[in-house]
Length: 315
Length: 279
Image (cartoon, rainbow over all chains, first blue to last red):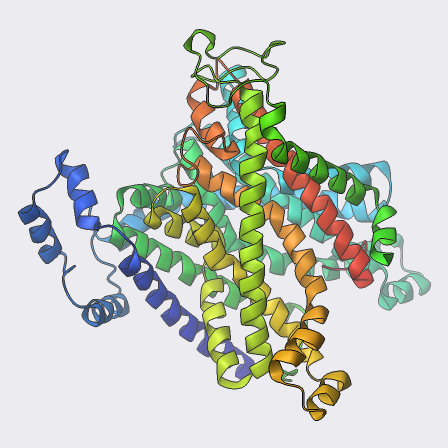
């Protein structure tokens, strides 16, 4: 067990190192001169050659590849992601400032997804092939097939423009949160529901459920204590792995609803070619993703004692 | 043949095939069936609601939405087919190399795969497309550059198990070359999981292309791409909701069709995955 965790940690470190190199390479190899783009945006006219040269020197953009690369690695090991070209603030500060808004959106969406997916998934499995089962499966397939941004636009169209129930963009009150959270949450709910249903059906077919029934336990106890608890394991894993994807989904939803979170700032940085912000944000998101997957893997061994990782099964 | 019989029983999968064939023919014959020129401006007929002449209305520049939606099938289907093809070729080549040769080649490739998997794919695509500059070609490059990863993993897995089989050993003992063994014995056996994955991925890829275009990073106006159309129609949402509804519906129906077919193929090719079994 300890060995497994140590091995997973070692791989995570290698992956993070690779991720930081990749986030550097992406921007180093990008065509176009960032200095030119940023100065044009700042000055409102084409910058002169001197201005570009000054900007490049100020931000160390003239150094050779290996120097820039090691500077970047040195910086990130010292928890320094550089300064935003646009705002002049440290990238890390920009991220921390915006993270609470994204976190709020992500947790509300996750909550909505769980509240929809788990009860519907279980009901669908218990009443397999009933009308309810067919409808919920069709709806979840529609949910998977629907572009998230389109759902967001439709919600704005009906609930804020036509009915005037919720504001169509912005941040602050609970009513601002409703539409973006529903948009992001339903996207999560659809696959989660399919998984909950499949997992419940699989568990109900197991021998220990038959044993529980045959020793005379009530259907309630069989379903909840033996069925539901075991069926939940893959669902929890899936939810853990969705954390990174939540951040990714937030990018589009935040852009539609002008939600002042990490995702919107990243998209704005991409439009403005704010290299340090792109590099830094992409790296932080990747680290988040790696760490949450690692946490899920480790948690999994505690949730399901049948799983043993010390046996290396092939490679 | 048995695959076809298996699929024939699967109603959603058949419906998926019918829709895909229908949209595919619309895409091919677009120039002959559009009622209007999709790029023709007509400032006197701006933002019209659906009428007999314009069944899906007109946009803010007076262009016929139906004609643009029809041309949109062309853009979306051809782009996603191109991306899936590139991704399959890359994934199969890289995955086979990793699985067949093993050792250092395998280690290096798998570490690169691990690193790429550390990023949520849409974020990486967004950044690459944004840095390369907004255009359809760059969106294709961005998606191709990241999407091969899952294919190479699956291919590597199947190659690893196939290369231990007796028939491969026999071929090697007879002195067949690596290239021959891979082509004759390994590739035919790894293709079926890859095809299922590709069908299911068509939907994801169509969605990603539309999302990136919606963010302004993909197709540029006046190209009639569905995501771009939604982006262009957005400011007129209140007065002309039809600009919002039809392109989105088209995306959803197309993706749904590929998901129906993909699910059906998966069930047909791998009965263990059927109804209820854990995916």
